Length: 193
Image 1 (cartoon, one colour):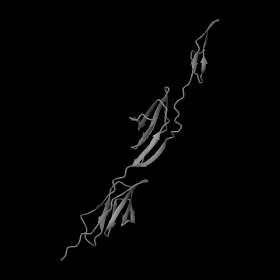
Image 2 (tube, one colour):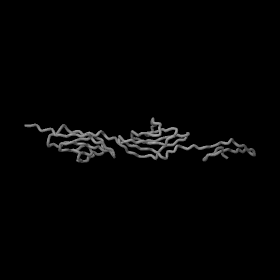
Image 3 (cartoon, rainbow, N blue to C red):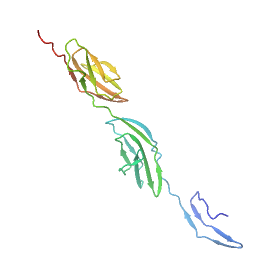
Image 4 (cartoon, rainbow, N blue to C red):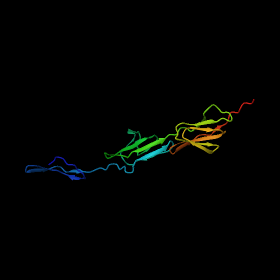
């Protein structure tokens, strides 16, 4: 009774049309279904990386088109894999034989640690004074060492010291860390009377 039909499986189809007692058959139409790209292996992920980590997202090979996106913006890469170098949500739109598929999202955060360095929080210090050393701002935790031995943890970039020595600090964000070069602290000698 309808002049159209939804086809859910492949096969050969024809229609018989009646007009009163008369009828006619259409030409046979062969229907085939093409498979959408299979991205089942691309399950998505939520990843935290350090600045120097390598992270690659790979899609199945052999598809016609690969459109990688970061935060919804199409990237220049058109291969079946992408090297992630910036934080963002990465997805892939692929095509094969005119059919398309989207991957699950990969939410990538790259923890960028500030350059680890130590500076003296003031202009020199005389013997007997308490001195504040300062690490670079921007880390979640600071682990301080004197002459290679652990001397403390802080959540801000400062530590108070009373002794000369070779100091280093390790800056940490999540599982990422960077250690400063050695900072040699020496008191300014007292003037002779």
